[in-house]
Length: 317
Length: 281
Image 1 (cartoon, each protein chain N blue to C red):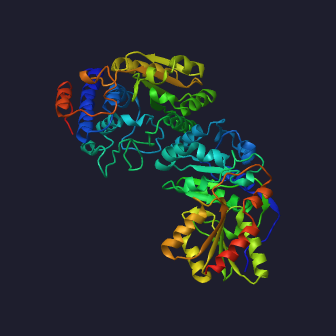
Image 2: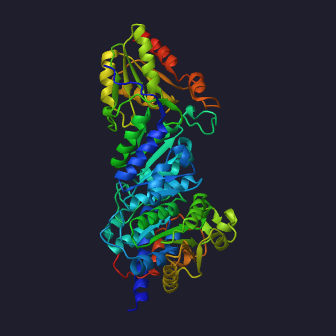
Image 3: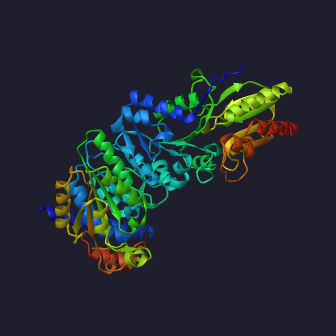
């Protein structure tokens, strides 16, 4: 049985904002920091209700990461908010030393990830962040796919002890998971069962993967569609069990193929169960200005790209 | 024995610890460590309200961060002498499987350390965060942080300086170790920073100048003066002029000992200048 229904569109960042607002009511240790992007991160409701638990840092992301690390020392659970680019590449060493190596319980919440940031162009569209963050020892890496999942993931990371990189996006996209699916860090979700190919998707590509599976079904190809929301630690079992059945896999993500989820899966398969794999991802390139939909098409990040890769990988079985 | 004599006695032993630690592994940073002995000893044995054994969250106690992590030998010696961990462990400095890493870290669980440091310019931000957490917790204690002067060349410090003043972080006492030296030479030669006191003032900080940063008496006076300025909506900095290598004549007035250990003969010479007051580890 398929495990999803399109309930209309919303943005993942609003899922984050609403999750944070809920945490404001339920977890007194949660504090929020922002580097001059309150509106973009949908933090205003949390701030209105918890003004003393909010820290406007200004345009100073390095300082924000350090302050977040320090806040944990008094038992706080800091959620930092800025774009994915400024949450990672700009502050890699601050995260590495003051947060990851120091084992601090900071939640690095990163909106506007990938090309779907859109018109602002490549300076703001990071496609390398998953790679940078998954390389850090002890860092948990999460990339959610819709509003509902982003909201419950926000709640889940507050209860999890340890540094988390939490990636979501800007545009309104179909909201198709249900809260009943739950959110367990490190546990993939089978959204559609199939037998001929495994499609593993994360973030905005999950909806595209489900759309692709419907087209493929009409072509007589049945797809196991797995949502990997936690890229690290990777749910190895759900992937290995699926490819033992299907014999091939397509990964799909809004990220460079170097360093992304597909690379992690490729490593897993190579080590534990060699299986043909194709990757839907950007091809070692920067993005550019355009609408999110135009960019997803131009950079090969849509359902058609997934369908093409499925045809290719099935031939390699 | 007066309080200051007691602290001076501890300082002799801390200098011996530093020298023996770096000599044993032929690596580490004795110069800056020796320059800050009196500051660390005054802070930990006279000034801060701290608890032993160590608790990471530091609630209702004063807490200290070392931003210029390369002077780890003085930090380790003082923490051990304060009782956070056995002094014998100083023997393991920079060795494989040790909790006493080249630069301080929480990763190996060494009591007394609350954040990793070594990559410069990050400690002030962390200290500000810890100070903000204290305010949220209605915790009246103070956060201390030590920075190097060369370290001020890192831009993150200036983000933090601006923030602390704008937000009135007034439960924080920063100290800058003005020894005027960094790896490639004097701070003036490498990258002249202009008038540091004026810069701090222009950023909205309360500035206390400490001209003799190797005088325990004057360090305590400066810290006491800083304490009186707490809670007045302004962050406080002590600009502490120190002599790198202080207490060992041939290590003073040069930057040669920034990151170099003494050989056997030099060690004996240096130890002869510092009496074994508390027993070597």
